[in-house]
Length: 572
Image 1 (cartoon, rainbow, N blue to C red):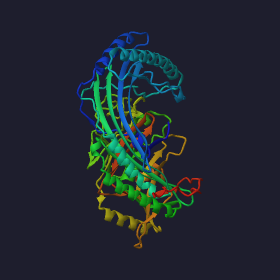
Image 2 (cartoon, rainbow, N blue to C red):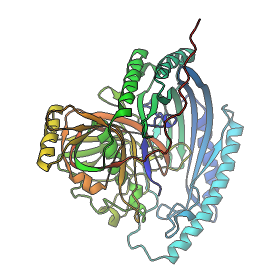
Image 3 (cartoon, rainbow, N blue to C red):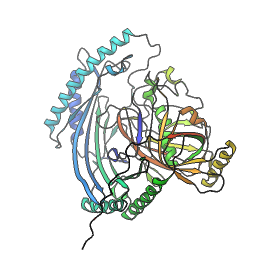
Image 4 (cartoon, helix red, strand yellow):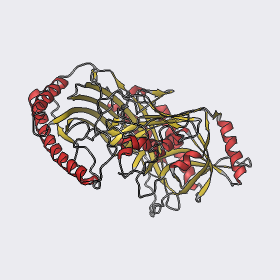
């Protein structure tokens, strides 16, 4: 299993591929009828083969996007794109044991679960049917070969005394609405982004910078052999401002600002973008001369945004159900249903039905997951006690979790074209031990004095993070802050520092959370893992942690430029 990562540095994935709130559809396209008819026709044949297919699903993705990128006052890219493609899933065997069953001892032996095929942009029936027919035939043949390997592996390995089914039985869902689109004044946005990006040209020590707009309308049509028929769409709009400078010792210093909305009108105006760009330029200048922090262990406050990523990385990935099925996963919470795993004043909810926190729209909102299951508010931890896991249609066995979890809770998710697995949606941290910002800072200083430390730390902003959940390697996390302050107890003002990575192991970190602030903040991004990049949100109040560990960031070996930056010629 690969490391999993959430990053605010990848706008084209929406900062991390912008997906917005899904809105109701009507049946405006004949695509659903074509898909249903072709799936029924093919399943009638495949159900009666020597190795019968027991489940099939078709998904069509129709994606239209606009992207504009400006750098130092010039447009680098301005284009529109429209594509349509489909995925085909075929399962042979039965719900208990099918072609997707893990090959114990050789995870690489598993073939692809899905076939992907490009579709025409028109709604002509014949070319769509032909493409789906060919992909279905290919996928079925691959599935039968995989089932042969599965059965051989099951027979050759030690018998599993408590096997979980490979696929859950779910109620058929029907949902239909109007296809989603957007209207954008591309020339006006180009001019706006040029003006904002030109501000960074005024500082010759800013080495890279761009301001970009990404708008995408995604329409999805899903049908399966169990009777589900779902047509839904969303529009996601994102502005991304990034800039980087370099300290005298060669350390790279990047900053990012991101803005998300479900329509272009919901994005900030030019006045706000200009003010934020100027603040970023000023902060980059301060970071260049900020002192380095040596490796340190002591008390700290994580801002709401930093705390959101902290929980996404060190907690959220460890409650994704697919990891509980993986024998190579460390299983941090295996068998802990009903047991305390967090301080008793904390609860953690994953809620894809949530559209906003305050005035901030959430990227992790959706109505139905990528397996056609309705998204559900799922309380994973209640008052510190683990209640369940995030589940797709792969059930968990009793010995893995302490109680049988056999139905999806609507968290089977994937980047278009990938096979869905259980993934996070909107993570919400709730606290019953909240204090004001002033009191939380006072508590930090008291803890610094109690421990006899020279200072505490305040993590104000982050650029992302990653974690590893495998056995046989360090089961640790690394959160990547880019704005950090030293907090002193003698009345000195907070001191901006640089070169800090927040590291640790999950169980130790959870036990050291002692209080929270009373104002929630949100981190929107795209999380990359086994099923590709999916849009997520993480909202949390600030956290007071009695002990964190930081290490120095990786050091660039490239020095600052030798040549002076070019300057615009003066007009005569």
